[in-house]
Length: 107
Image 1 (cartoon, rainbow, N blue to C red):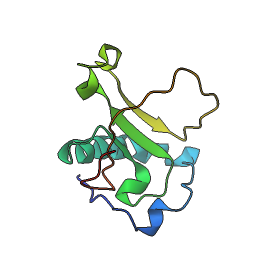
Image 2 (cartoon, rainbow, N blue to C red):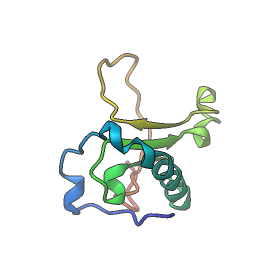
Image 3 (cartoon, rainbow, N blue to C red):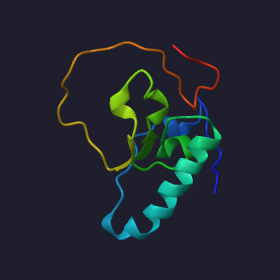
């Protein structure tokens, strides 16, 4: 199922997303599949729950299109559920980036 992508200004993009409860895990496999399908249809490399109107802490990423410049990303296709940043490491880098919820803008 391809979800509509919500754009800048939609209230779901401004609120803190909720965690998935353990009793919700049966539905997550299909949601992940649908999110990848939605992301590919929109020519994206990442998509988060709020971007499809779902205020849940989930995002999917397929970084393989970046493999020409970053070979280590050749097979980087993952889904993250209830993820939290607990540590930052590495060098800062700068590159162009876009967002499916901000169509036509890349900085």
